[in-house]
Image 1 (spheres, rainbow, N blue to C red):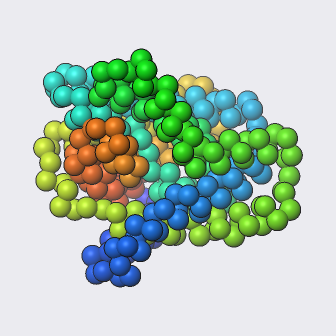
Image 2: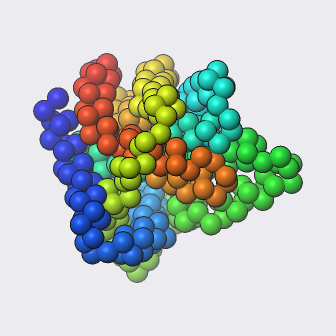
Length: 310
């Protein structure tokens, strides 16, 4: 438990620093808005490209890993759909519960894996990002457009292609997989540039996570907030753990899968909610509350779940 706490504390101190800096107007609101774009369009794509393109992809282990991660995602998705329907929420609120339950914060997951398991853990965790990012974007767009729009038959393919085509994470992942399979080695100059830019991704992104928290946004109805918390921080990791054990995923890889599964939902949920006509204020409340309580929920969850792996 102490090891988990000491690994998690630096991450949330950096997030808290980002919140404090924004509250204090340091450097400025414009800086944080531009910083988000820098991370989204440059730093994180470079990190994804350099790590995935050089990863030794074991197709057998990768298949089991994908089943584990995607199984947790699917379980959280089903929980969100059923619970929102049982509670009678309208489509905008239901889609916020959906995103709050099934999306993930890659940055916190990667930082956790690196702090707990070192470079090897980081490399395994970044494969989870490669698996989840395209699938998550496709599924969320399909389900949200279906729930929020009437003319889904004509708009759905366009919405999916637009979302994927302008997502730099998806583009960098596809380029990285292509480079991995066709080249399988460092590309002179390209990897050097990507290494330098990617090295700044996590610390800057964690500061941005804190800067983007909106504490006042948490004045939302308690029940949808709680449903999203249960879906993301309980259903997702427990399902991933059970599936990983059932399929015989190696223990070290399963540990990373569980670590990656316990993180809060991602801030991009708010952006997608605004774009597609969801309940953006509720989504902001879910993102903020999950990120704040993650400082407590993650060590407790890992202290309970990791010993079950052996």
